Amino acid sequence: MATVNVVVKHGPKKYDVEVDTSAPGEELKYQLFSLTGVEPDRQKVIVKGGQLKDDTDMSKLGLKPGQVIMMMGTPGEGGGAIVRPTEKVKFLEDMTEAEAAQQIGATPAGLINLGNTCYLNSTLQALKSIPELQESLEKYEFRNSAPSGSQLGLNTTTPGTDITYQLKNLFRKMSHTQEGMPPFIFLQALRTTFPQFAEKSKKGMGYAQQDAEEAWSQIVSQLKEKLQESGEGSSAESSFIDKYMSGELTSTLECDDPAAAEAGEQLTHSKDQFLKLNCHIDGQTAHLRDGLVNGLKEKIEKRSEALGRDVTYTKTSKISRLPKYLTVHFVRFFWKRDVQKKAKIMRKVTFPHELDAVEFCTDDLKKALIPVRDKVRELRKEEEDVERARKRRQRNPVEDQTLEEKKEQEKKEKKLATSADGDVEMGETFKTDAEFEAEKDASILAAKKELNSLIDPELRKDDGANQSGIYELRGVVTHQGASADSGHYTAYIKKTGPKDPVTGKVGPEDGNWWWFNDDKVTEVTSDKIDALAGGGESHSALICLYKAIPLPTAEGIME
Image (cartoon, rainbow, N blue to C red):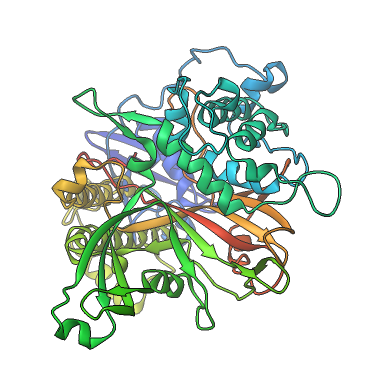
């Protein structure tokens, strides 16, 4: 081991330090930490070639005995003091089942197939991925009333047949276990309220397979009626579905026959609520965007009063409100008369992990969304640039310098002069890694605050709407098979970041997904989602659940 004794000057104090030239710069930093109390990431040590880095090759610095090295930096607040845990450590084997299910990394509960109920299991897992829905359900209390969608003609309902109340109970139980559980009571409530789900199989004993999209729509319709959100500043209530999952379409109806306009017929304008967007699939549909464009324009046959006969009209729709949670339905099933069942369109249709919905909006909504969307993209680029710069700084600064950079560095070194007492007089100030990081963090924080300031005032009031126009994919319900009345349904749900049980703070996501195949739950990578585009009888996306990307607060904090 080759060593050199040097003098490190920190403020008014000098320290004799034995430097191991075969070790990286990080070791010297820790030596100085033990002498000065200044953490390594807060130190700036000036050596040949510039500022000392953690992976600097000390043997290439040409250190000489007695050489004076300048160090600057102050200890951080707290100094990294070790604090005794305030709570007693509890081991996994000592926890209850409910406690274990709440721990970081716990596998979520699956649902047992009760006989052709995979359509329901996958639908429920997708709905459970909406945290606001779970929070709202926890506040729900049973009320004796008649469900408007009931086909039984009953005047009252009971807790056992209240779909919303049973969904609350089911989600609560699922959150307290990692085992597969049977949704008996909820299934009975669904079949009582909507008897089509109690249809018997034509192939023998048991119940028939059902369409997951129909189950989704019927459950959401019940939640729309029953689940209410308290309004801020008043006692008024609004539907949870209306707030978080419902959008608005502004449509124009125009007759295709020019004679109608010549006869004085005017365009018809209307506004309609939607709970899902349909992705219509034809021979040219290759991507979700193509199908959404198809779905927002349709042909309607109706009577024209101006012409006195039935003619074709074109209804063109634009989105005038984007909900926080956007449901997209791939219209893959159609009624095939010759076989008397819902056949499946096998065509491959890709869909993005991030959806920009701005192009489907009205001009007024576009004006509100575009500044925020563009700032989001600008902020992301800045964050990526900072991360690339951070990785470059981790490399050896001397070895990675180009010829031009080395010449520039030599000019800088000429500004360093040695005084009579051997001290180094600084001609230029160098920044520590900590100071560099602080500057970049401050820049990004300012950009986040600016992003928040760009949110449209009207959209800011609507916390259940998408305020940027950008969505991230959170859930996919898939179907495997050739028809809606057969095959198998599963669900893919994106993993959320680990939540600290003490602080409640959510950490970064790892990008993986949970695959819910009834009661079998498996962790898979994101490339599995890309394989759900279809193209055969294999698993293909039937429902995609998108969530508005989070935006920073006025303080620049991402919640």
